Image (cartoon, rainbow over all chains, first blue to last red; front, side, top):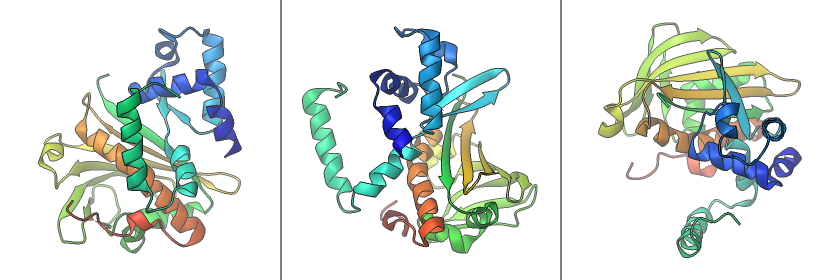
Length: 105
Length: 153
């Protein structure tokens, strides 16, 4: 779980997760497009994200594809979110999104 | 992209044998998968289906590959939501890899069409099912939310 928090504690890595959330299953080259990070930096970030199991990769032909793995985040949520709080939290999250737009905090 | 796919990974403190049993034994599946029973003879070419407690079939298909305690590949079609059923067959792969003190479970669900509604729908359900499966194997108790089929669905 330490690895997950460490991996999430960087805006560049969160941006990579956002990119995969928007379009899952990208190659390194696709992820590097439109990003103001060097290919080396993206590679390094992806390695940390993979070690935390937040990103998983599979080979399809000659392409290595990157996928967002939400399971560790779900496990963290399960640990601290009680079973009856889920619906109320969802309403609050929707309200916040509506009022603030979708800006990253 | 020409296809839709997601890949989920979780690490469970158990053995490949116990995890395998949990994936194919209806007495296990009903505990962490919303009361559903997964039925099949579990051999290549055999049909399989997921039964909802009220008697409806949730999903069905056939066993494409089976290697006990290692790998299971299923042809998978939704049977209870017309718009998802219309998309036809998808493919689900379970891979189990023994680690030092746990088993790495990889789930790949894919279909040969872009922007699949089926893949979108199942991708939302899997994290909860996997969390409950993990909880059941590690603590003996599944998560509360996955004990019963959701009302009205």
